[in-house]
Length: 143
Image (cartoon, rainbow, N blue to C red; front, side):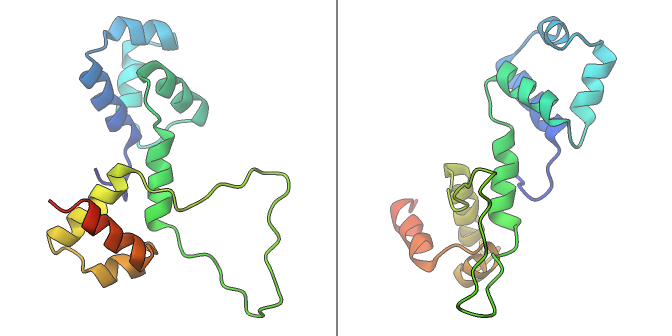
């Protein structure tokens, strides 16, 4: 799974094939033509409402793919220049924990290390994974 470049349409098509879902069911669900369906399969991105409907139909959280991308590729949190200064958190929007790693992410990271694509230090620095967390994964999921 490549979390860096996401082609959501291709992932949806893979899930449809995996479930062996009948095309007529999909067309009825979305009230679209077969041509529009193929356009969705070829799309790099989709409207969130549409993606939500796909997630429900295919019983798969396609938004999680984007969450994994954020975990792996978002820049580290901005460090405050002054120790007294703090960043005010939004009181309107819900706050989520960023560092929730799924099994797919763990497997992806461990594969990078096992294939020597990246060193442990590179993984720690590039993906902001705590050293202790990485070593726990290596110990726990050793093949």
